Length: 453
Ligand code: UD1
Ligand code: CA
Image (cartoon, rainbow, N blue to C red; front, side):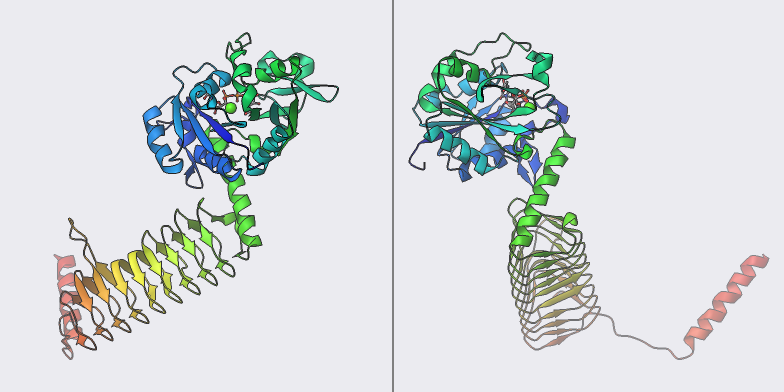
């Protein structure tokens, strides 16, 4: 099958008013990735060579976004929204290049499975002219019904055009269609708009092809493949299904999720075997986690790389550029941004590390802050191997602490500290014997005098 050339046409010209959003519908995200990008990924996984993206509302925004998730896709603008067949024909220039297979997908159907696409292409390879991917549901309302005669698919009837009898059919059009390239334009050009909505329906090519004696086939896929997103409630439903799939995949690949339903992955999260994720953990985009890592409860992690056997959280926040090397520890209420925490270094309590390097084995005391920002620019803090930063210290960048450097608690460090040096950056303590008692007496007398007067 791989020798067959293929064009995937993704329809994404929906106006999206029901999302109540300034953002085009198909750019709303699932697991951090626009839903239309999920469709593109599925098409690519099924071996679709070329991509045509049919866009309408918000064309410029779509074009810009598509550069990221589908840089090779050719965009076609459907000026007026006259129906799904009309939308496919917006990509006429691409279709007429002559492909073996044409796949038509909807940009608002993000959970589509590459296997369903591959199965449809297989039917084309076996000689079908049109393949419709159907699904069964107890609640078919709103979907096109697959009309079969003597076991053969002969038409798809949209809900609004169905007779009462036809409305009872529970085998529905999932919206994914595969068409033999050599028939595609001929069939699409014969579609008219005589129906309840007055639109050019892609689904009509089934009846046209069947009437001409071409082989028309329905395959069956699960309901998720057809889950079309029209509002934010459906968006959340799709997110839920996506997360469920991903959690299962993670667990089957050797990751322990103690309460899987409370862990949220991004579309690109990489996570190694024997990593344990405690409840209520959020992974934003671009996170790579090696093996044997412990992510404790309530951690929020994005743009971070975590090497093997690290320990993170509970309540840790790793932001973009956090780079934890083997066996590093970032503990509770710590934030790390754009910083390398080298092997075995510990940042355990209530600390902010930004724009920094922490050398191997260094120990960062509770409440340490790298003061990396002066309101205009960011500056770097370098902490050497084996250094010890006493609790409640502020390291005012740019500054460096040498290897084995030792910072006294409560210091404000504004000058670099050489290797193995001890630095105090705080006022010297004064202790005045008996003065505490004296002070208390003075204050209590003053308070009593105020009460009287
Ligand atoms: C469509 C199918 C229906 C199927 C259902 C599955 C048709 C006629 N009907 O119905 O059989 O059961 O999907 O979800 O195909 N679009 C454009 N330009 C247009 C019209 C639509 O780009 O002029 C795009 C939309 O952005 C959307 C997709 O095509 O991504 C489907 O259009 P929509 O109007 O949602 O079709 P449904 O009524 O859901
Ligand atoms: Ca739809």
